[in-house]
Image 1: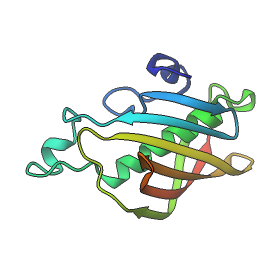
Image 2: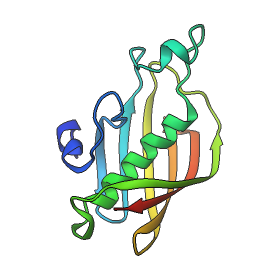
Image 3: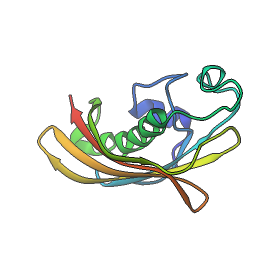
Image 4: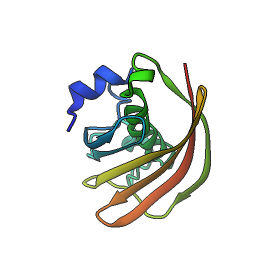
Length: 140
């Protein structure tokens, strides 16, 4: 299990853009499972939306990408590098994510060719799928 401090040793992200609180499962270069406790104090809620706070889908994708980046960048071949978004495909948003939700973020790296790879990512609230996407990343 990785705590926030250990995650920050792998990722360059910092508050308010670090969207993963902990990693509970990690297979370097293959997959990771992390968690994000969504609180009312998130900086995006005052504007999205004031009367009904909802976590933006693009930030759910970013949280999934950060979990995937932990899986990738914890592998010996990629330590010290940065994983950038190359694309988001097949994104589906199935349930709203609101303050008080605990998101389980699962990302599996399904293909890596040179500096480019693809991850299959799913965000859950309990056993309910909130979002899923295929994420393309570029390693630099």
